Length: 406
Image 1 (tube, rainbow, N blue to C red):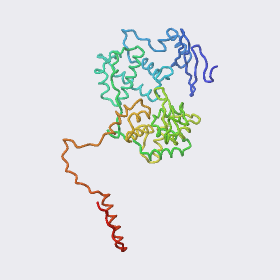
Image 2: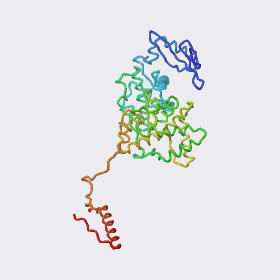
Image 3: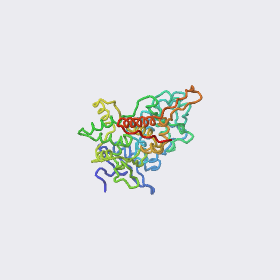
Image 4: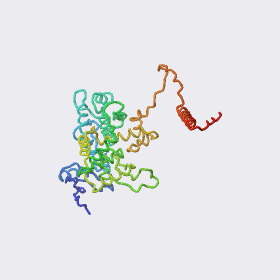
């Protein structure tokens, strides 16, 4: 029986999204294999054209392995970019990457820039199979800002080209190109993203007093978990509160475990206290809509109203990691896994500078004069107390007590 928001068509079904937009899906069994793919079309006529292409070769159509002829150049044109971005935006259940809308917009701009700099000796578009790291990639990245995001986008594009058979492993120029790590702003210049606790609490209280208090609850959860703002959004949509805490996981101050879908597709679990538990319950009540954009702007507006230095809720992740690293006895692995990293490598690479030990004298340092012995303050205090007691006894006419020998 079809759902209320779906209807059938010859290729499968059509699902209507929350904003009323129809999405056509191919959902058919061919040759004993069931295929499912969302179509990037605007009407059923276009969907029927795609269905005809699917029926010719379901595997090539759904997995994107239809390659240009060997003698044809592989160009980063509008058609290839559109195909790749459709894959990047598709849900993981459909073999996509489920990229956020913000990252999709950024990727589109980066790929447009990349296409503009990929030119051959005659000024024409360069074949993606002939791109070289030293000759084309590194010179293009060096003069521009935002190299890390550009590297991520280019590496993701070539990973997809290789996975779909469009390029061979030997033709991937960025396979060994490191993405690089972020900088610790408060130690290497730039914007300090550590937010004082009292500022966060003031903004939370201010937002909770408003008629629409969900962003105050969201900031509470962000401060308690260090999650990305997109993870907060996914928590509102598909998250879960696990309570009571399983007996083997109980510890002082832990009231519940919050679960949100990670960008990798797996569930990410975080222990929280009472305040975050109440905020999480409020966020999940009714599963109301949640906008990352409005979340960020609402928090910054609250800072302005309270005359506080503006901060973004995304900074809660950086603040949590910094506070954890500065705590004695907290390992890099625990600090990294708490916000959802696979291990402690990122924490060590980015925040390891915060664990720098105090300097000790070296052979290059000027000799320092020896420090004279310091008096024993505790012994002096005890001697003064004893003398006062003897003085009081003399004034009262009592005989003087003999001091213990030794």
